[in-house]
Length: 306
Ligand SMILES: [Ca+2]
Ligand SMILES: [Ca+2]
Image (tube, rainbow, N blue to C red):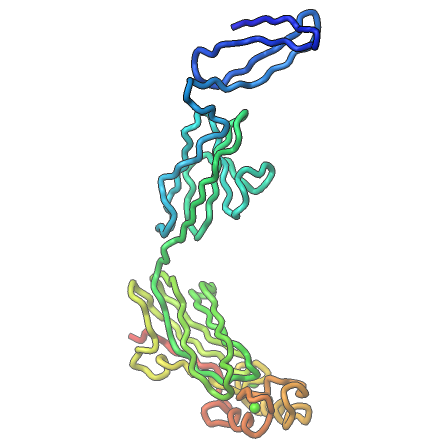
């Protein structure tokens, strides 16, 4: 389609073109006898039809909520030829050069995620942003148990869930605010079926290991076990040098004049405050000297015994 106009005294040329069909097109201008050439994009709309100035907001096959791990998210836009960009860090999918990703196919959801998606077509603005929030359904079961330790300079307890040499999970229990020996419940969620070891460690204590724990499809609560050493996993206390045995070498450390009868702020080794009351004295010595601690060491028990 061609149209011509002659510039008036002010240098303005006015012309009319008639669009036959709705859609987007380019109009090219040229000034005869010069090299001046320019083009502009125009949108042609039917009467009563609004001109689309931005791409249509993307649609998805899923709504926000809980999904199984590995669920596929499919995005689409009804704007022909538009690209979809998305982000997983909460940033705008409209930010060029940002962490956005061009959507090329279904997105696999394997962890809790926020997805922001927008469609874009050259010559149009970015669409409204589609926001989706997914949480992945927890797989596996809960393993719980009870540990008994001394406050030992307010140290925390570490519980590692192992498969052979491989650490599957590690949780920490903060020291009880009260001094002395306390019982603390722990839970490890999302444990998939298998055979595990539980390794419990705490500064000032020797380690406690439960081997061959068989986890199936039901939650396993070790506090319901019939064996006292399993239902309450009690760590031995007094291993000040951390060599795995409580003996005269630990006693020597506790008895050092730089430790004994000092408060923890002054002591050269504040861990000597085994009961966690802030002072190193005969109460800590009594713990180290207990028959169940002195000249004893790490505890390893078999959960599953044939
Ligand atoms: Ca020791
Ligand atoms: Ca103490």
